[in-house]
Length: 580
Ligand code: DGT
Ligand code: CA
Ligand code: ZN
Image (cartoon, rainbow, N blue to C red; front, side, top):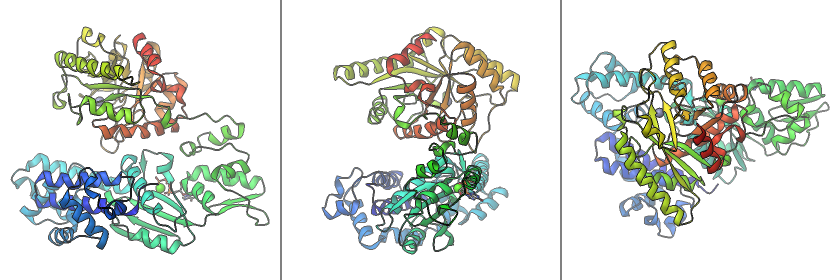
């Protein structure tokens, strides 16, 4: 764990400065500078205190002289005067409004200055009374969006998308691990199991001094509220209203505590019963013989072994047959992050992406990929600046140039020329056959007419999937987690057609989609034998990191690398794509 507490602390405070400046209506450039520096520090391997001591702060990308001075002040005093002034000026409730989906600091600041609103409750009331739409530059549409956003935030207080919870969990683990008395700290609960919606984040730590760990935990700069503080268990609320539980145990207790807190509860109940059948006792503190003697459990796997089971990966622990399979020794070898050799669906600044072809390619190479499919939007998606035949051809030419350059340099990497072609309302595709024929990969997706009835939608997708040039159906059900449900489609019929036509279905790994879901991916691959691809649908270089979520979907679906096309080397992949 290279990252250190000071890096996170500094990053969090810089981010807060950025937020408060934005609410105050400062120049966007300045706001972005703070956020960017925070982002860089989060991922910085070297401890920032060390960098500062050596006088090398300005060597960190995005850190100039002025920022370096603030970082030094934060390292010395735990805060800085600029931040303290902003905190005095901008009420704390305003920053929490930034958690409302679709609401930025500018809007929050405008509302604050116009109506003096400083809390979420006041904001909601004002929106209901249609007072927001009277503000210059806001209007009725924005008012509705804010109300909808508040509703979403409320839902999130109950259940958060994994895409929000996981990065927070990772960051807190990094932060806690930096405390010397913490011997080990891990993510547990539904986040570790990779469920797409989670009630809270569960963390478990091993330490001989739980009180000190708890004290450190409840005083983290990102804590909005301490819900409960106990000697070995505490609960706080942090960004996005997300609740985080921390349990601290001894080193000896750690493996069983981690296993217990990972769950699921159903899986645990089965294990406890199994222990009982063997005359043992299993609980969150350990595995014990009848006489109370503790059995040696150095790792989770030891506990499973003591119960005559194969080690069961966390994603499978839902009591969906994994215990029977582990008993029979027939658990599948699950897909791993490192198995993927490329991503087949990403966007660039040719349509609605934030990065250039080359920037996306560099990010893919940095992940060790051997190929990256460039599938920008097609022309009918005008809001996303979709490509027509002519721009697509120009993009293709640019890709060729890059590929040739890399080939000369001896790099084992290539971009695939592709498109995410819109499936029009009647199932025709948005580009001509000749255009599609010249590409390496064609992903067809629905981006409009979501309210069609079941029969129309099913026939529409079926027609697209039967098109000879289509290789993959993108985000097959169209759900947006916590925002939009699946469109009304007979997904089994789609499975049938995909099998008949030898087409692949996508597990869209974008954290707000995860579509296919784990249940549907399992059915498609294991019951129908349909090949799957896992794609991030990244709209920026950082978006490629969502691949981890897609891999977890596949693992929860009991799938291995043999079920996923983009675990194949480029030649095998291309031969599949040419066949269809
Ligand atoms: P969620 O609802 O998304 O937070 O899902 P989990 O699984 O993270 O549930 P949570 O946070 O209530 O509890 C974390 C783990 O603690 C859970 O997966 C298994 C364990 N656990 C909690 N309550 C019970 C229980 O009543 N019986 C057993 N056997 N285990 C429990
Ligand atoms: Ca949980
Ligand atoms: Zn799409």
